[in-house]
Length: 281
Image (cartoon, rainbow, N blue to C red; front, side, top):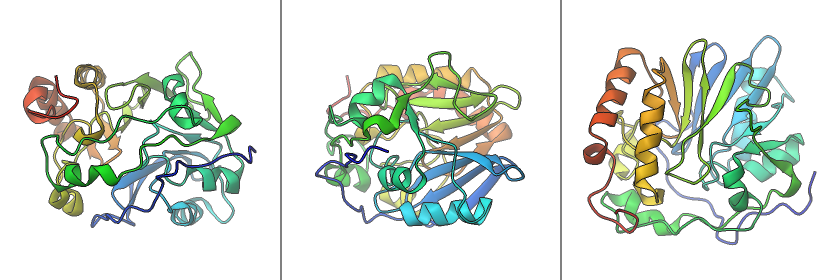
């Protein structure tokens, strides 16, 4: 393992927690979603064979909590085959270095996310001026400097397969970040969304804290390409998923998911795209 791994100088604990923090949902027998403060991690794998992967890596300083959840589900000293990142924002890579060091496992992400994961490039500054509530106003305190995973991070295979996730394909869903991906399994149309769309209005503190479920676009204060974001939602809706595990908010399934996604595509500019902000055009 690469000993030179490090977080950016702005890495820090973020004091925000929802009522869902510390709770998990078994969406399907091999799909488990767990909330770390205000963001979800996902455990994908077989409880009998104990073979699984971790999708995304939670908030800063959450490594012990994530390890505990995994050992509760898969057994003491369990470790994933790999960590798959939907993207590299602070709330999806918050514990990744500690987890890589603890388990000695590889990390996979889209090639276009690599600069943000090997210390080369910072994400654009969060936008506190964007239309939204208190979380948007708080966003300047969120880390945006790159982390450096060194040789521990590997580009996802170009054929669309996802290492150690049989049946899943990765789908490029940019907009929120350049290399954002979602993961889709054709045989049961299960979808792991990342932040391409979410099921809570992430800009509003009250809704984040209470986890009021409603479909929305990617978190506004960190989304820089709204044209691409809309196209990504259209791409995901066309898959007709039966269940969606999102980066923020509760899982959504069945008719509610179908109708909500159709509504989001039809009214994306009203529901998701802010009326004003630094990255709105």
